Amino acid sequence: MRTRAGTGASVHPATKAAVAEAAQQALRGLDGEKPTFGFLFASPHHGLSEALAEARERTGADIVGCTSAGEITEHGLTHGGVALMLVASEATTEVRLAKGLKADPQEVARELCANLPALKKAAATYDRRHLTTVLLTDGLAGSGERLVSEVYDRRIQVGTQIVGGAAADEGRFEATWVGAAGGASPDAAAALHVFGATPWGIGVDHGLRPTTKQMRVTMAHDNVVEEIDGQPAFAAYERHAAARNVRLTPENASSYLIANELGIHFFERIARARAPLSVGPNGSLVCAAEIPKGSMVSILDGEPEKMILAARAAAATARANVKGPVAGVLLFDCVCRGMILREAFRREVEAVRAEFPEVPIAGLLTYGEIARSHERVDGWHNTTAVVVAIPA
Image (cartoon, rainbow, N blue to C red; front, top):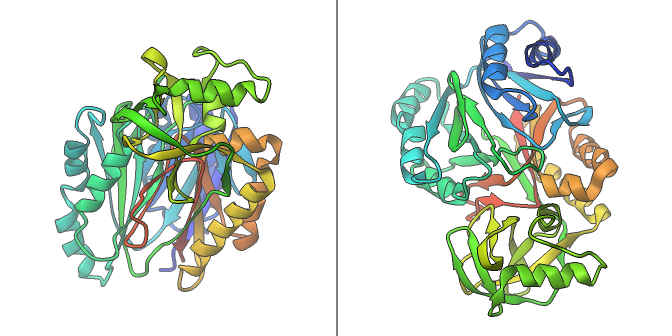
């Protein structure tokens, strides 16, 4: 059977009605085929447990999902709604949910991957030897990067890929939820493991540039940066904002921090982008992922045109990595890109569509993007577009 995908979206304020509307649209895209698995991205306005239960009841598919800072389909970006992709496929799949991410990402990874050897054996019967794991994490746990590494370390074959994103809550930074297998929770991670006959295509790009000189992280632990160049880390942002006639305080800083993230340098190249989420005690910065002590960093900015070109470049790479036609596309895009582009974000979706005309697209604005494979040792990203092409 050829793999098919369909998408749907709704901004109906009632959760069940919104999911019902989105499911009806997505099912139409499958031309009568029964969906096997799916992805649900929902505004924090909606209860994720209720949304996933309704999607499961209406489609019969195994669905993973999370809350978002904006919901994406090929028709554009919504806020306050739901976006759903359903996939009809012969792939061998499994969904898992594990809680306790902040305290023990290693144990969460173990739970998510516990059945992979048996799943691999079942898939091999049908010559389905290419594994892609779609991983969704709590965006506020601060341990997402370590989780990606732990899951990748449990890979059971060459060619394993991990893609996905960190749940969001429309910039509130209060609670982000993920769900699968009949449940949903904050402080959790969900995984969909897919063994297919051909590999999924992945593309990653950001289009960012530094706006400050390089600075050294002189004190940090886990996902908290305490000092930059021997001063409270927040002081670097206060100076950056003051030069732009903006007065930052710990109370009003979150949106500015996310729109101007920290870049970790490898010599002159920006190796990774990291999102500060809030100001902590004594002028520290609480980030979406770890920034090690001794790192050289700069504050980043994105020019809209370069960011849109980067999204198209990521899409082109994902397309080139698929051998044959594409059934559907997942787009994991950082919330800060939405904040920088604003109304022009539709052009980013259009840039991805230009590489995948007539292909259904679903995704979300995240608090972190995931793309890990043998070609990419850095699995956790911020301010980045991750494009994932599902083979037909």
